[in-house]
Amino acid sequence: MHDYMDTPEVPHDGDGTGEVRMLDPKRVTLFRSEAGAPRLTLEGEFSCLRLKVMCSFPLSMPDRYISLRDGTNREIGMIENIRDLDGASRKIAGEEIERRYFLPEITAIYELSGQFGSYDWDVETNRGRRKFLTRGRSECIIQLPPNRVFVTDVLGNRYQVPDWTALDRSSSALIYKLL
Image 1 (tube, rainbow, N blue to C red):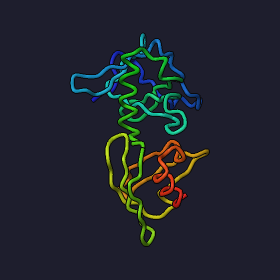
Image 2: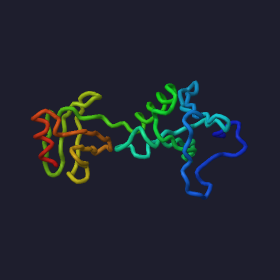
Image 3: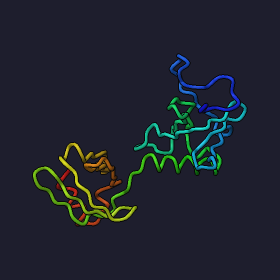
Image 4: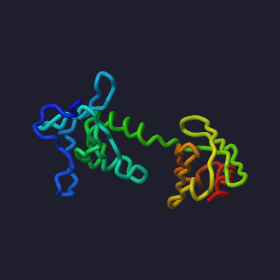
């Protein structure tokens, strides 16, 4: 299936210049197909039937430098700030980013026990209670300054603690043992 409509030439980042194409958010319209797939129209240029919305810096700047890509993963262009899109487009971009970068926030740790380098976690997240297993400290726990922590379980699911010192006393004490 052809990814583009109404365009004589398929736009992409392979023009040899190495330059990132910054898109004017006023010309960008994101919408969904009847089946719910995200699509894009760049006013006066083309429509993209299969769209991927990706963050250039998903951990540090999830709302900035949003890459819009076609179904073959070629970059169409970049939006500097998601807030500059119209409301409906911003909503769709946000939903796609949320889906792609699913990252529940750990809000409490009920139990954290380890044996032979494996750790069983029983936590509360902003998405509900979760139990998972991690192996090894350095492979599964990453701390970013000042107090942000990322945890990856054995299945590849990721969790975050924006500030481990802001957790309740018991939860802070449990996670501190692994940092």
